Length: 304
Ligand code: ATP
Ligand code: RIB
Image 1: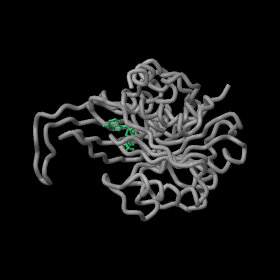
Image 2: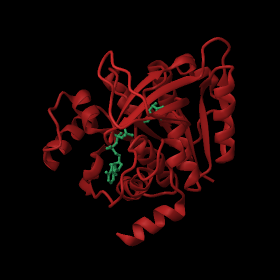
Image 3: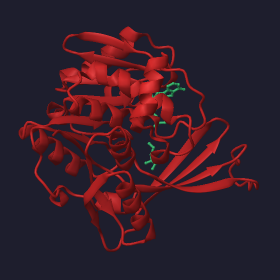
């Protein structure tokens, strides 16, 4: 049976909702706070598992109460957390997320996530698995894990988020690269924004394909996504939704995509499913707790 293995960050998200943002030096009252599981890696693992795909999480946490809470959340969602290593010293990652005026601002204190290394993998990659990584854990570990997964014949998904400088040749170990248009601009030096045409976005995706990624998917928020492979360019629509909080929409897309690749779908088929899943995730507050079930996604696809 195929499975998804997500290597990456685990954070406790401290989500503060307020009517407006304080200006520098200003104090505002009347906000609400929620402590919610998050981190790009954990979010992607939860998205995959809630869609029914056997999923494992590999990463690092501190020796504290947030770590216990994140482990409990993974277990409740049937994610195998044998590969989550507890480290003495640094705290479990924390993200401060301010949700105000229909948008979010995020500050991450990475803590234990930055102490993750490739020696912490509990098992070697297998060819029937899909391995997923992002850029919230050390680059050298990500590079080594992708190379090992690729060499073993597993399929690999790299979410280039948040963008950091990286050796271009690491994309040779990547089957599907996923990134939003800001990250795509940063990765390629292209000037992309909400008014960029499909051809302009596809041209930037092709720069990453020339570096070695077999498929590149640009996510475009409410405009959907663009999938570029050797066979051409496909636009994937966004699905109609009522936005409450977009935090983790990109993570939902990546986790759902990985689950569908593991189920044998093509990148374009998997991206359409992922777009439907991500449109469900924005209807609830938070990142990991907002990930939809397979039934919710099926209903969204049936309505389209
Ligand atoms: P985040 O950083 O908030 O997790 P992101 O910038 O990585 O997100 P986006 O491109 O904003 O990723 O969103 C990912 C996917 O989620 C989109 O490709 C789309 O399928 C879906 N999505 C996001 N926002 C909306 C929306 N308002 N309506 C419908 N679908 C949406
Ligand atoms: O992509 C959303 C995630 O980014 C949040 O859950 C937060 O933890 C940050 O890592």
